[in-house]
Image (cartoon, rainbow, N blue to C red; front, side, top):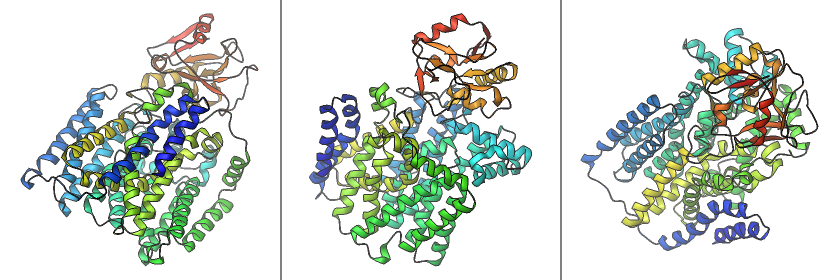
Amino acid sequence: MGSCVIAIIGVTVPLMSGQANLAMLGSYLAIPMILAPLIYIRQNKNEYHFNEIEEKYYNLFPAAFFMFLTISVILLYTSYVRPYSYYAVITVMATLILFQILFFPSNTNRSMLILFQSSLLLLDLIWGVNLNYFFFIERTDSFFHSWMIQILVEEGTINEHFDLYRAFPLWHILCASFYKIAALDVVFYKAMYLINGIIFAAIPPGAYILSKRLFSEEKIALIAALFVAFYPEVLKYGIAALSRSPISLLGLLLVVALLYHRSLAATLVAIAMTVSIIVFHTVSIPFVLVVLVVLFVLQKIYGAVNEREIVDRDYLVFAFIAMISYWMYISLELFATLIRNITASAPDEITATGVFLAPMNELFNYLHYSPLLFFLLIGALEAVRKDHISQTAKIICLAGLLFTVVSFPGPSLLITKLGGNFNIDRFGAYVFFIITIGVSLGFYTIYARSKKPLKSALIILFMVLVFLSVSNDFIASDNPIVKRPFYTFYVTEEEVNGFDHAGNTSQGFVMSDFVTTRYMDVATYRERSHILEVDSQNMNFLRSSSSDVILIRKGELEGRPLRFLISDGGFVKWPSMGGALEYYYPDSELWQSLDRYSKIYDSSSIATYI
C-alpha cells in the first residue's frame, strides 16, 4: 500500500504549496498508484481463466488485421494529415492482435504470425508519419542528420561540419551506404527514415525473446511484443530516426545477451553490443551503464545468486573502461563537453514548460501513461509476491517500476539541471523494454484473474491506452486530439520553398522562428540564418539592419504558436539558441508590429517582410 501513500502525498504537497496545476498533473500517476494495489489485493487469490474461442475462427482475426492495415494505408495516402479515423483503425489493429493472444491457445506458427503483425503495426505508425509528410523534423535534429548524410553521399568524407559527431558518425555512414547501395531516388532524409523503420521492426521480436527468457508463459511474451509496438518512447525514437534511435534495439539485445552470460557466444554478443553502442552513439553509453548499475544494485539487494545475475561486476568494469578509453582517445572534445555539462549551471528555461503554460492540455497528453503505470504496478506486485517467478524477473519488474521516475513525465523533468544539462528524458529510450516486461506481466495477471465483466473492461482500457498512445501531441503533433504549446513536427514543401527563397535572395539576415532557423543553419545560405529576436517589453521585432528579412510561418501560426528569442537588452548579433525562447500565439499583440514592414513574399504558408 506504499504506492497509495506516495500518491496521496504527491498530490497533497503541491496543493498545500499553492501549485494546483502540479497537483492536477500528478493525478495521472496518483490514480493508478491508488487503484492498482487495491485491485491486486482483491483479486490475488482468484484462479487464472481465459475465455477461448474455437480454433476454426482464428484465421478471421489476422485476416481482419490485414484488412484494417490496408484501410490505414489508404487513409494515409488520401489524407493531407492523418485523420482521427486513422488512430481508431490502429486501435482496432492492436486489439485484433490482442484477441489472437488472449482467445486462442499458443503455438509456434501463431506466435510468429502475431510477432509479424506487431512489427507491421509498429512500421505503420513509424512510416505513417516520417515517410508520409514532406519533411518530418521531430525536435529539429533531423535537419542536421540529413545534412550529414548528404555530405557523405555527395563528398564521401567526414568533414568539420560533423562537429561532435566526427567521433561517432556510424549512423550517418549506415544511412549514406544504404542510400548508395539501394540506389534510392528519394531525398536523403527519407533513406534515414526507411532504415530506422527496418531496425525498429525488430524490437517486438526482441521484446518477445527477452520476455520468454524471463517467463515460461508464451502469452506474456506475446503481450510484451504487442505493448512495445505502441509504447511512447518506441514510437518517438522510431519516428524520429535520430543517431541514437538504433540504441533502443542495441540496448535490448545487450540485456538479452547478458541473460545468457554463462554462454561464451552470448558473452561475445554482449561485448559486441557494448562496443557497438559506444561507437554508434557514444553519449548513450552512460545512460545504458546507469540502467545496468541499477540492475546490479537490485541484484545485490535481492540476493540473486550468481547463476541468476543479469549484470556482474566484471562486465560493468569492462564497459566503463571501454567507454572512458573511447572518450579519452577518440573523442576528447566530447569528454570536455560532458564535463562542461556537469559543472554548468542549470538552464534558465524549465524543460517541461507546458506544465505551466497549459496544464490541462499537458495532462490530457500524459493520460496514456496512467494505464501503463496501472499494469506495471500490478506486474511488480505479482513479481515480488509469487515464488514461482524467478529472481531475475522480479529484479526486472522492480527496475521497471523504478525507471518510471526518469522516463514518465514527472517531477524529475521539472528540474532544469536534470532535464536540460543531463537530458534525463532520454532514459525512456533505454528502459522501455524493462518497463514493458512489467506492464505485460501486470496485464496478463489481472486479465487472467478477472471475471468476464472486468475482462471486457480491461480490453476497453487497452483500446483507450492504444488510442491515447498514438494520438497524443508528443507522437501525433500533425493532428493530436489536444494540442500542447509546441511546434508541429514536420514542415511542408511550400514552407521549405519559402525558406529557400528567402535564404537565396536576402541581402541581410533571414530572421525567423526556431524551426526555420534550425533548417537554415544547415542550408547553403546558413551564414544568413538568424533566430528572430523580440523585445518583449515593447512587443517589437528586432533587426540588425533594414536589409534583414523577417520570415513568418503563417500557416503554422494558424494552429500553433511560433517560438522566438527574447532580447530585451537589444539586438544580439550572435545569440545562443539555448537562451530565453518563448512562444507567441496568434492573438499576441506582437503581430501588430508587422504593419510597419513591407511584405515582399506571400504564400499560404510563408510571409516575409522587410
